[in-house]
Length: 82
Image (cartoon, rainbow, N blue to C red; front, top):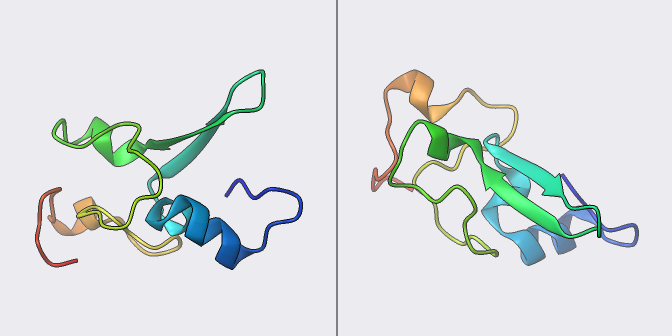
């Protein structure tokens, strides 16, 4: 996760949303220091946004970090169980 130096986990989750705790999130930084949160799950599911607007408050592909990927269990983006 890309926390600011003075930012705790709660503040990061509030600023970024679900991506701050998601297995599929990847932070990319520009040379000028901007952060871009990329969803790797979008590679497998074209209907999903590769760079969703932040903060993300709801996402069908959300998988808490450290848990098996939803796609490994046959779940696909667009599922309504979140």
